[in-house]
Image (tube, rainbow, N blue to C red; front, top):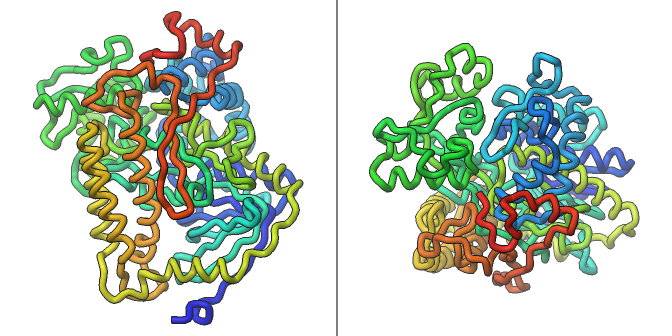
Length: 588
């Protein structure tokens, strides 16, 4: 088949291309537009369907509206401690100092937050935060954040390309020159000529069988970045949220917001005992997510799990009026999907793959990657969260670093000369690659291969890991990568989800390998990375990030890089943490 004649390519040009229309991508687009540059925004799904809507609990910002003693320094300490001190301290400083301003900015654009009796933005408690810090809108904060940003970018006249998937970034003379994409509805190809790209594509939770992530979360941007020459960091750090729905099977993994525990929900095992005192007697259910997730895991392993392999989360003591006011979405979710009224019955919950702390290594101030002209923000970027993310820091991340990535990309594009046009040869080679599954008559099914990959990652590289299980998992994953070279998909490019999944698998397999490689490299337990054969934190790993690069032949290489240490001022802020030095702290 002569793809060049059969498939036309539409050429478009923008100063900056933003890939991803969640909170980070939209905030980047606002910054680029405000700088007076042209910006196009590509969205894998429909506008308004980004994974940002799944962030329900709130935005973490030390505004001290409820607890007067809160400030950015305490937020800084909480974040570093929860990340077990392998965070990039400069990123944490920027997040904690700038989050309040970004929240107020969002409010000025029309976001409607819950209020205190005095009329200030209400803030709620959340796991491992020292004070009530999360600015929220009931239990649907992410949805309100996205609505507000969409209104803003629409007002600014930003151009959107919904249901468009980018398959390749093009480099000329070592810097970004363009990107090839296709429309999901019909396979129509789009060539974006651009000076800079902002990646805001979120995570890759669809690697796991039980996940709170929706179908879009396949790591497209992360794979694009490393293939273009960027460095990945902390890929072993996969966050399993303690509370996902367990039953019925069709909704297993669906998120149960941490706001339930923040508003007073308690965890109880099958024996009716509130068990978190055995794991963190001080913070109980509001311990950090890695601690709570492992506690539920251990209760189940000890035979004290609920009928479907989890724990009971009970908030009935708060009363129906309170629950209906504070957690309306959670009540509606359990009524509709599990026939459970959480005002009268406990919820059955278990850990679910939720968030990726690892991702593309970036400069804290500008969000630039190792590839000139390529920027990254939000979940796709590494460094902020270290070994474990604090709840609420994700929405703050989108606002703070979405803005910074847009400003960084705009500054780069303003001074960069227009790159040469991407060659027809480069474009044709990529079109040929993405059409290969449609040209094969016989081969593995992408649906079966995806299921096999999810089961492999869940079994070999899930919440609890061992070196032997990881090694076995890597062996089988490489077998799956070989099978993926021969995927066959019936039909054409018109409304063909099998073809879309076949292309998603390129990213998922690459990132699955990166997770296992990194987990094998880090021979200790730290934060979300829990190895049963190395259960303690090792001081030798206390100031080390695991990094991944890819060579021109596509092989991944694992190495290490020193954690960027906090300067004297930030080190002074950390000093109240038990008087310990940052090297070798056990953290939360």
